[in-house]
Image (cartoon, rainbow, N blue to C red; front, side, top):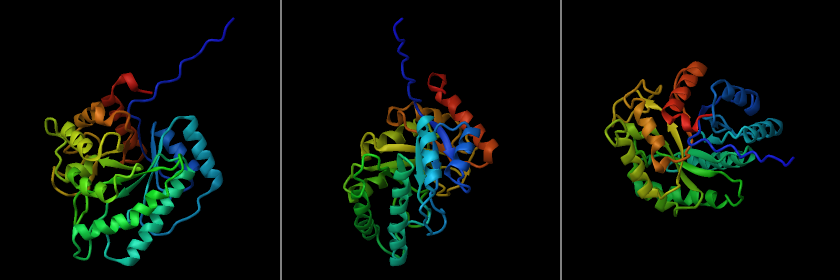
Length: 299
């Protein structure tokens, strides 16, 4: 009797998952939490998100985490610390930001991450946006040039909600940011739905989600959108407040998330939730997004 060839399992159209805790280790905490919330993709911190401290990681935990995620086909992303601001007027902040981002990129490669998400920062100290962007270019391009290995992660720019002197909040702001970084081939975008909604892109409006994705693709090019942070918003469009709500419980509502996933610009782009509620809330949000994605691509 001849061998029967089993066709490979088709990839999930838009993997859906969440940011998972790793306080006891990537494998010890992250994997078990991912399984409890039925995540198809995970995002982790590899350093304290609110401090400058960095660490070498735990080789055993790293290997177990990477192996399990590979075996279970769970894409992984790293979120860099929140303190990073390469547009700052403070030399100390900039130097620490470079070290912190380099650490996140290195650790991302070690654990098999597809991308490292970093907030786009702000122009502090009364400096112009142009001056701040010139500094972003000076400090970030060398880090991008270090990404020469096929397994190195992409650097994913995450526009903010528009507070303060943000360098990038609306989609149009990505044009000068990408130009400053020479449209580097390892440069991509993480679009946070709460952030972009707060910055003035009304995803809940008719064609709001579609128009936002189409503008993004026109500005940065096809294939640059690598991750979506799927968060509803506690505040109205344009409020410039970064306050996340559970899916369907905020001013965006549930339906626009389905339209985002259905759009060709977001084809196969993973969604990571950063919503309130712990295991129960995260499980509900992930289940809701899977319903909106449709049964044809569910696991």
